[in-house]
Image 1: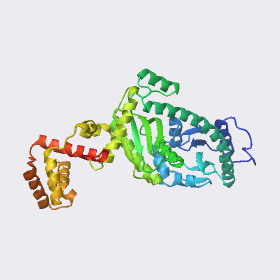
Image 2 (image 1 turned 90 degrees about the horizontal axis):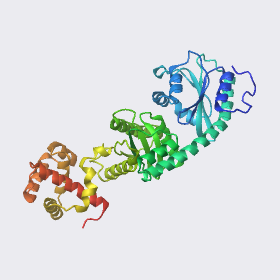
Image 3 (image 1 turned 90 degrees about the vertical axis):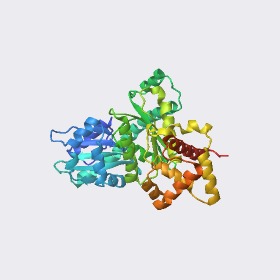
Image 4 (image 1 turned 60 degrees about the horizontal axis):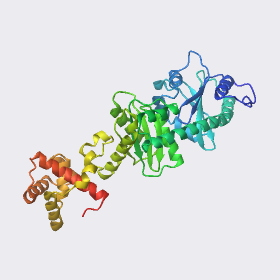
Length: 411
């Protein structure tokens, strides 16, 4: 229990010295985290400490399942909005014992958190007052650390920007840039782009970093913000990188909506690469995914990776030599003269792999109406829906037509 009137009125050489003093004053183990739940310093503890603390110290960050539970129980939102200490009851599902926590702030900006492991529940009101004072002292210590981190991140982002632009196309030069920053080059990597409807402001930026840092499914190497785009270079943790990337994206989208009510973002990632000289190519592929998803939102609704694009991957290169085939010209002319929707029907029919029921459902028409339209198309345009090559050509032609209509005028 605290027994000094001003226990923190002194100069601390380091954050480690600070947590030791706070631990001594409160007679409890202490940890200090940054705003994204990375462990910055911790005091000693006895053998009765809880699994969540041990795991945090080993990982140097709070485990993802613990963070998720703290959000679920409204603990993190309360810490973000309140300047007062918060008592937290044991959450056995994630190995978290009784705790008291307080946010460390610079005005309204969250710099980090102090966590007190109150196993014996001996913390009284006087100790809570001490904890408030400790959070004010911690602010200056964290600001010094943040200044160093910001400088390091600025250097990393500058190198990443150059890598994205293809300035280091030579493998050895790219490796050298990583080594100069003290970063181990990834053996398997990809690039994810999250594209938002709104411009990414400073406050929005912090929310993105928070979600990125607290989803621990991939190793984050670099990140970059460009207007509406949040770009990250990620390294795989397993031998199934495409599954990891898909899972990470889906989790990221869910967390942005759940925690910060941010919705309507588009996502895409490039190929899986092993050589650093292809970072620029990977970035271009991720951009291509987003461009194509914008033009073909229904066709590519559940597509995130460049490898999943199928024939859409080749549309841009084929487009310059595109010539509208005769059947489409005939059907388009018929629609114009008869105010009909045969071309729309044809595209939907091909999109649904000639499934009558699904096509009729999508077009909100009766099956008999659909059959009539298909028969009419076969008659006027001589389409044989049983010929695979003919169907494939029509499908590709319709998508090329749509692509060009959205990217340049069609004569």
